[in-house]
Picture 1 (cartoon, one colour):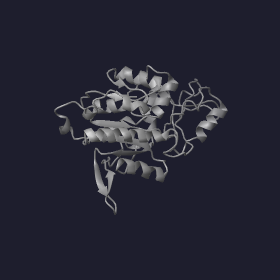
Picture 2 (cartoon, helix red, strand yellow; picture 1 turned 60 degrees about the vertical axis):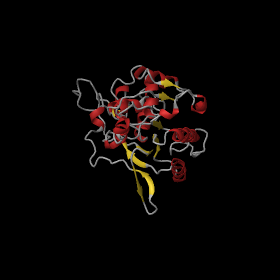
Picture 3 (cartoon, helix red, strand yellow; picture 1 turned 135 degrees about the vertical axis):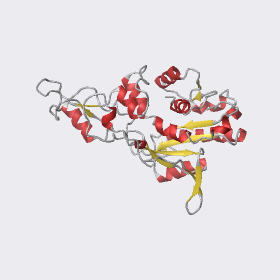
Picture 4 (cartoon, one colour; picture 1 turned 180 degrees about the vertical axis):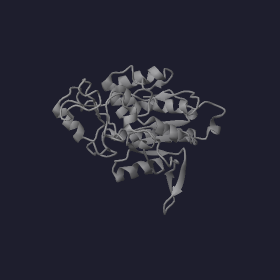
Length: 302
């Protein structure tokens, strides 16, 4: 989605060259719409054939596949068919480190990953992660683990190298009711938006669908009855067709993106991308701790 590029720009970095490894056509479409100069490289498994000036890479970001790690998945583990792409990221990082020992990296994955897999990831990266919840900035509880050498300290009995990003002591005062475009919500902080959110909750209003919405831990909104009898103040029958999933504008807002960021892709595509994305304010906060003095002589390359 270009989250890292947008976060860098919002934090006043000037991007030199930016490369992306993506295979979803609509993800590429959206990223190229916002960042036409980003060079699309395709499948990450082909990285050894990429034409890149590796020694000038300053920052590598990766949200490697979580499907085999998430509590919502099959728990195949970090060596599963999808999540094992993490090791390709490690190959790239280690290669760049040989040419530029000061290269920065940012790796993210789900907080629900098994502890044994978290340890494996940490040992390969040489640093332990920090848990950050998006609800510090957004009306969404989205717990994620971040491994980065942007800022770290040595912690614990054995002085283990650990990601150490200072967090706000007080959350931003924005709640679910503040981002919806119509209706009401009883959820103060929305549950985690997932990649399957739109696909698993059909558009059609039905009593069965509404009941499923409320039973699942997903964001939903109650639409108000617009009839004259209700004066638009009371929700109509809460057992019949009045629950809805978030619209496209709300999907963008729950992840901290501008309202129109996903205008050029379909609703389902926007839901898929945003449900699988980094929360923009979280990434902005993390990279705000990059020492900008190191990049005075050249633009940041990612």
